[in-house]
Length: 351
Image 1 (cartoon, rainbow, N blue to C red):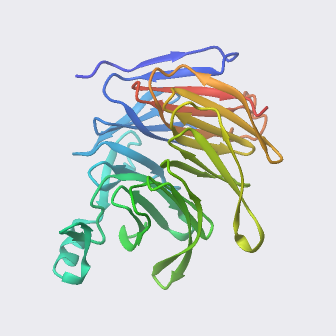
Image 2: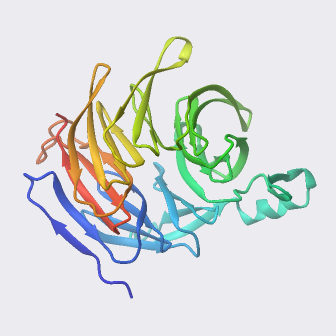
């Protein structure tokens, strides 16, 4: 049995206000709502935390948990090292009980597709697989709930598009020449970042019950891998393996224009999160940089130090009551997950 989780609280005067340590696996993914935190680790567990206390948990049969997203209906989608996406929901009778609601693709869809030779595509030399299945790890997930769509990025070099209501794969995009590490959807555009050093922009069109994506821009071509993407209301940011963050703004005719690059990390940027004018970058150097944007200039206003392993995932939650919610101070809550097996909780001023 793993050792019981440890929860530590800190005074409100400190940036670090809490920590969760559970000696059972490295933290590879997390997702947060106002009062619920989901964490995924390399021991296949998804843990659910409420106010830093363990609230629930569930386990997949196989596959390190590399990505977690939560829908408005409180369905939880998890992406795994084994190439599968699993769907979970809470019991109507007991919110602490989570059950698996399905997996993507569904077994019945796999069986139905497998009888038709044209549904097989080459995934590696002399190896074919069904186009509706990922043939390598799922690295990232992104929801577009207004369109009822889920995007999954994979090391198999594709991005797949899923309809949420029936869990069907409706499109597979041959996105890159190497592993796709990150995907971020915004309005009618989808951005992908890859180990091939590029960031690509795809335009989504809805055609009946299906989608069609076309490449409209390649934002970046570099030697180092693109490791993270985030879309804020004013810009697109990408992190890469040499520690830099590039950013773009929307220009005329919906063309993204490169506006700059900034660097503070000594090692690879592994995750990004944004809220308003604030950007957070977590890296293999065990640090989290807090950036504030003023005009075109990004300034590192603080560095959050405390993790003893690479910072693998970040999530930021804005106070639900606005700038000065009752009993709160309007500061942002930032969750960071690390390969040191801990999740830390920070309160960060908007500066």
